[in-house]
Every structure is written in C-alpha cells, then in structure tokens.
Length: 306
Image (cartoon, rainbow, N blue to C red; front, side, top):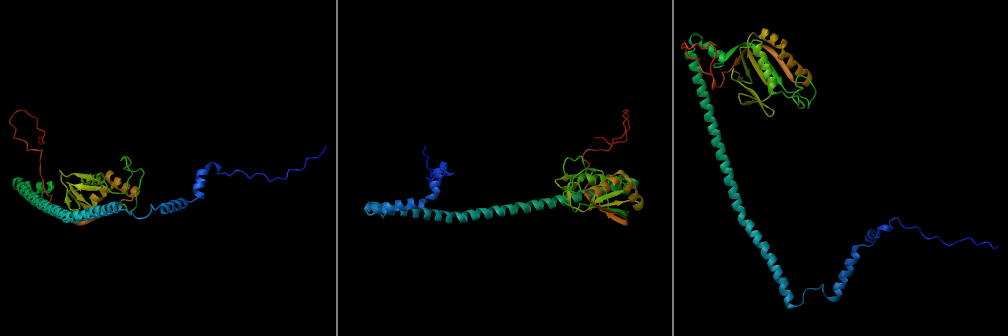
C-alpha cells in the first residue's frame, strides 16, 4: 500500500482576538479624516462648496450676517445701558446697609447707657433702703465693686487637636475637642462658691445669684455676654483656705481630671488683692418682697413670693 505524502500546506492563520469587534477595529484602522476629505472633494467637484453665485443666495447670506451683527450690537448696547443701573442699585443697597448698621449701633449704645443708669439707680436704692446693713447687702448682691484677698484661677483650652475618650465628660454624646465648655465653668464657679468665695467674676463679668453661664455654639456666655479664652476667674475670700478647699472639693477634682484627660490648661494662685467690678444690672423679674403678716394664718417661710 502506498504511503500518503505528508501535508506540507501552510495552515490558515488563527482568528484575530478582536474579530468580534469589527466595527471598532474599522474605526481605529481607518481615520474619519479620509471621509471628510472625500466629502470635500465631492462638494468641490459639483460646485456646492463655493460661495453662492445667484443674487438671491447672496442677499440671503448678507441678510443673515446683518441680523447676526444686529443681535450682537443690541446685546452689547443693552448690557452697557443696564450696567449703570445695576451699579446704582448696588450702591443704594450698600448705603442702606451702612445706614441701618449705624442706627443699630446707636440704639445699642443707648441701651447700654440705659442699662448702666438703671443699675446705678438700683445700687443707690439698695444702699438707701438697706438700713444699717445696706453696704453688706449691696456687696453680697453684687451691686457694688469689691476688693480684697482671694484667688486667681485661669482655665484655657488645650493646645492639641481633637481628643476623645472617657473622663468626666464621657456622657456628652460627642467627641471632646479639648475646649472648655459652659458646664465646666459652671462647676468651677459653683465649686468656688461652695469653698467659701464671697464674690466671683469671670473675665471681668461679675456673677450674682441671677447670673447664668450658658453656651452659644462654642462660645461661653455669662449673662448673655460672650467670653473668649483664657477664662480668668477671680474670687474674693481667704486666699489660702479658699484655694485648699476648692482643690480638695469634687469640682476641683473635676477640673484636675479635665487637665489630665483632655490637656485643658489650668493654674490657680493666691492673690493678696483682687478687684471685682459691680454687676451691670440687677433686675428681679419674679421675686417680690413679702407683705406684712395680716393675721391670715399663712405659714411664715421667710421666702419671697412669685
């Protein structure tokens, strides 16, 4: 039996991997510039690419150019006319803002003067009708400036960035940032009162029985006046005894925990003399002096009515 000769024919080339993407391959291999060139040549051949030769076509082209130029000119003219009007309105608005700001500043100044006058009249009335203890009552109520030995406590925000974790403020519900909060100053002031302070002021703001320490955002307000750190607390009293009593109190330990945990900066020093201003106003809105006993049998509680 004859043997078949070996097949020496060239095998067919393998299929291209991108055979299924013939459209994309055609786009990549053949530039669109060839089609543009072919279309341009065709237009030149039949004369459609030339400028219009008939009078009607030329008039239409001229009318289109004139219309476009007219639109551009009118737009520029309108913008040029409206610019002074806008500038005038802007100037009038700025002038109104300046006027109203000046009026508000003037009213605020009048309110401050009236508040100072009311406070002065209250202090004089308190001294006049306080009897033999008029000066003592005025001192304890904050109606007069005081001076004497005491302590100086400075509380300032931490230098570091955001700090979290537990500690005395772990129940606040947010990450602590090492900033002094209004509740911190409340505890500091209450601790000083409890330790024997006779008068207290924060950053020159005298505290009384009617004072409130609140927060507005990150700012601390004392009687609705914003304070900025560092917070300098001055307290009149027996300096050494007051300092020792405060440091041993729960509020003093709270302040120490703030320093250890959140790096809040604190320092306390005994002063030979501190000076505290009078409270700006002492307005009692609810309490009234108790009326004389009329024999109705009401219990004598010794408290005011409201």
